[in-house]
Image (cartoon, rainbow, N blue to C red; front, side, top):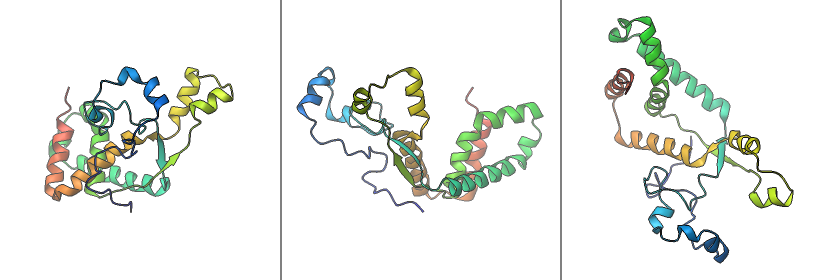
Length: 191
């Protein structure tokens, strides 16, 4: 299983960029000089913004993708079986069943991962730095940016998911409560 995130860091930026920036960095980013330290180095889900944090630039992949995919597939199958056996879902027209599943499969998957305590380890992947691109005369076209974004996932976004999982685990929710939450998510499409 993955290593435990210390409580003081859960939901907070993991990049440790709160130390002083270089003079050059401060000059180049002086238009952001009026922001508070909290705004510059806040957590991924904070409304203040993430201007000074490098977590959004960091890309990560799963350390053991096959094992994680297998566990996630098991959770998804278990969730679909649960939904299929709900009497209230069974009486909904087939087309509406399909729409409900298509709209809500992702939050149901995350909730199922929380229920089954599916955790995953990450490893950071390196992407060419801006300096390297400039020195090697590589263009910064939209296709190059899309290629770099397709490699892995944003560390900040993955931390949001992991933080949510840890919050569910800390609540110690019972199986019956998870069933109620799944029903709420399934039938409350929000549209």
